[in-house]
Length: 88
Image (cartoon, rainbow, N blue to C red):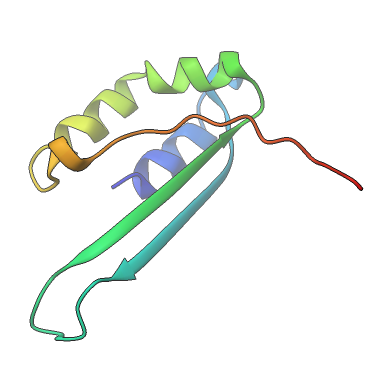
């Protein structure tokens, strides 16, 4: 879903620059004939301002419109976190 978005955001203006992109996919079914997966994608930004610019970009809008074709949007969500490094 966001793979192409990630590459576009890394090459756009500094206002919405993506610093890191990870995709995690897990299968829910051992039968290879059944398509049943969970996917988590992480978008990392340098600042809140960069994240907000990216989330409001035309590229993100296009990615969401595309996702509506194949995702269960009732079970799709977003979690925003602020990573903290704890040394102890």
